[in-house]
Image (tube, rainbow, N blue to C red; front, side):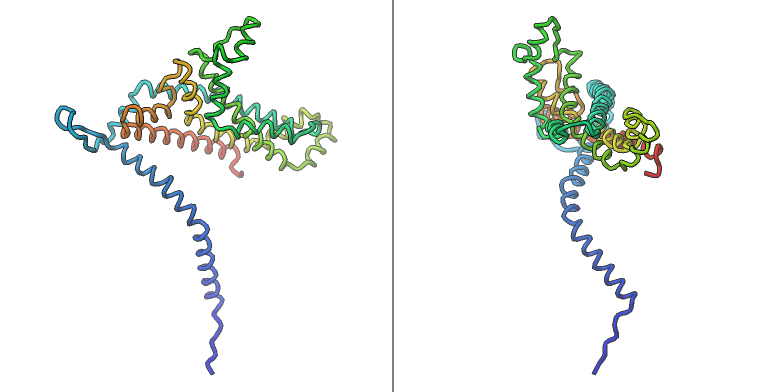
Length: 310
């Protein structure tokens, strides 16, 4: 009778490690497949198109052919006055809108974290509901509130002598910012509130014993401890700033003060589907993506410099 020796410990470890790797690949394969098809391949395709262009033979009446143009599309992008103006416009938008939105979200989270608030869950749901409304629908709803002759808000302001044109050239950007603030404040509030709930309550009790008021506890203990959550929501908001599209696109239908090149994303859409310049549009999209990456990377580096251990 042949007796088979049991496998050694090293062999058992190798077999267990191989099984773990197979299980890990089995769980991650669906995500990797979706990521490859819907993220990585489109990015590579956009990069390829950004270095090419369409040229027509003869006097421009022949069939077009795709040719390599190198960095010509990128040179046109950085010398495009409308594109540079749109970048400055969304940066101004972000400098004002993001701090206001995060400030409101922080104040709401601090209020909901106190013990004196009644029906906390109901008010949190009411604050979060605007996030559940799609951006296009939210923009249409607010468009009715901005449009003279239709809006009860404009009619009420006119009745008290305050004539405000929400769609004027100097105010339409802030009308757009108001829509985004209404939609995203509750979402950011939930993130900050969750961070507040993770703080040990004994710390607050100790501060009260030492004579600290609720105001001091909020601004000297709670706010510093939830700063990482505030910075993360700030990062998401900064990235979203360069992606501004739905709100100005909807308002463009009711006012001439929002042009097709009002934001960078609107320029990409118009070049690709309005002006039939898909290769130039790809270059503009790549520039926007690189700008978003640099802003995100800079923001994360700032966060790491502030608290390298977190």
